[in-house]
Image 1 (cartoon, rainbow, N blue to C red):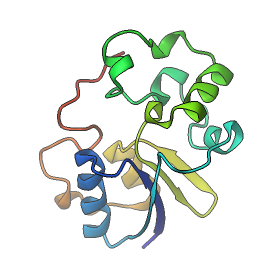
Image 2 (image 1 turned 90 degrees about the vertical axis):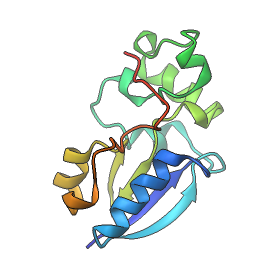
Image 3 (image 1 turned 90 degrees about the horizontal axis):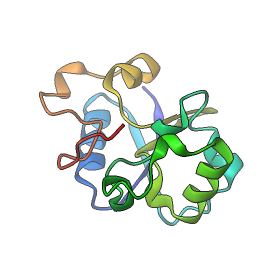
Length: 136
């Protein structure tokens, strides 16, 4: 099984559920605070790869939910600057195993990456906080 560096927002219910799934799947976690990490644009960019910029954003951020920040309007560099300045905009969790990195918790993607005990996932979608509806 993998040792995962897992950046979370402390107290986030979605991140708590994701950690439960990873631990139940036999993985070890090195949990870190997403909000206190000293991110650079370069270090953060590695987590997103070729994903569309709109998918990098935390849909639970109040400014995103209110429509004040529209993720699809941002270019890569501009989005990274915003996220370095205000890490709450970053899609959670960020995970790293060795040199491989991933943002967010799409069950199929995480399972294909490091393996999950799918029976530990349950019915609730662990991708987002339970109170959030994804905004395109």
